[in-house]
Image (cartoon, rainbow, N blue to C red):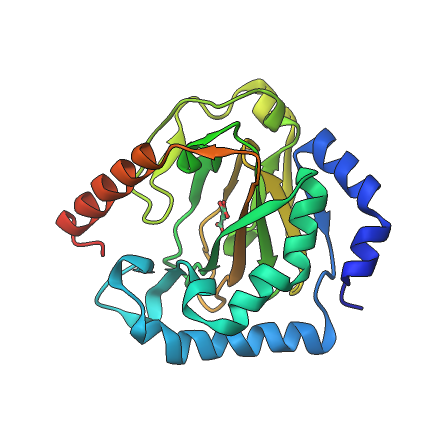
Length: 260
Ligand SMILES: O=C(O)CCC(=O)C(=O)O
């Protein structure tokens, strides 16, 4: 059964505690039955009808000349009312308030895919590096839209890494995940790595400082579709100048490289 606002509130204390301890929560079967089917149908409609109307800078392909290589759609909650409701009124919002322990601001909802054979790995990173927040207190939600086995590129976390601050990041060649942790792979990273193969409808969610990554899609016939949601804790302050400067620089660089 799909998880409701009431169920989340009933278990709020336990969820908040697990999130603080581990830097993530894993909620298998968050969506099931009709609600999962609605999510998948609306994702198909989004790609078919809304994608062509979206700005180029919010639509990423593995290969810009190949429409079937779609890998990311940004800000879908602003481009589509159904996803807008999911973001602002759905259970994601309640989960964000519970885990972060305060009111939240919805920031982004994204569609993620790793097309078969060409879907690139997601480098190890901390989302807070992109957010420019003080303090770095935010939540990223990730929902599998189909079954995801390790060979399709499932997400992994370093358990407890949210307690150890921001690591040094540098530019990677991965479109949509342009920054990676430079010294990733320490003994502590390896000892605390947790991998999350998922069934369709499973949800995982992590703190802005939790180190995470995903493999590439090495299959020849399976996609790896997921939905992401980002919420900032209401008490945080955003350094908008730093964020805009970063985005303008990245967009210019990606355009020069012919990636967007
Ligand atoms: O879907 C993926 O490969 C990774 C997603 C991710 O890193 C994120 O949502 O922060």
